Length: 401
Image 1: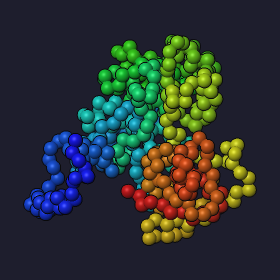
Image 2: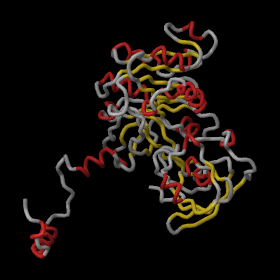
Image 3: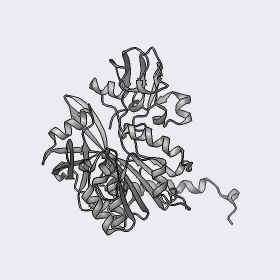
Image 4: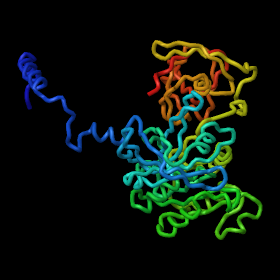
């Protein structure tokens, strides 16, 4: 082994002039070889993807699937690949108000290689963006989205080989993608899907799910219908709600299994209590993001005496302004309603894109959406997407990109 103490720094100084000469002689061109890390990273994680609607498919009342393809005229020639369970953040401007919403990709990862994403969007009661999309997106509409994002995907180092997937309503979308990925050979785990709906007439993707289950032995679909007597009209369906007992009925009795859950907020509140009865290791319970959270006053720990209207003084780089809004809206919603764009992807406190510095003021964060680190508490950092003002506040926000 070389004697490190014998090495003299002066011997390396001669390398500097040689290196500088090579820098100056080199062409200012990006490396063309296909395995360059920067090329791969840019292909998988573009800052923006510019797409257009190629097809619109009605999915019953107030629900549509939108087939999105690259818009080469605006600079996107290929779609970024993704793992089943990822979402796209849609960027829109509605009446001069910049907004974002995250929607799970319902198509198979294999479809991305063939130039197609599918987003299935159901109307959210009182939802501004879902209503706008359902009313205005038609064939040819230009759409701007993020790269595929999110953590709701199968991880063999963490998750069990057998997975019980619990879906409610439009929460079926990431599971349809996973089921097709299993059938295509892109994922390798056994899926038992318990899909809750009111009755058979409102089941989304029933034919598609039946087709995947018929051709792939690793996918099993069980419909759980909540309307009285609804299960009698569908062979093999269960009645009622997704309970701990129902999960145990379909889960393996003598080996580990994971539970993946995706659905509306009310479903999470009910099923999470049922999951506690199963005493599963925490790592085996996976939640998809809630989406945007509303009505913080419904939470048991929300304080009393909060003013209806608050002021927010926001600084973004060298721009500072003060705006007003309802304390029932998140900080992000208040800023957007005042025409101020905030960086966002998940809108559920998970991704960290909106990570901001709270200078002063009182705030409330629902416990189930509080993904802050210990350092965030120490230095006063928050996620505006799921943080609600309890008083006038002062905040520094990063530039939206």
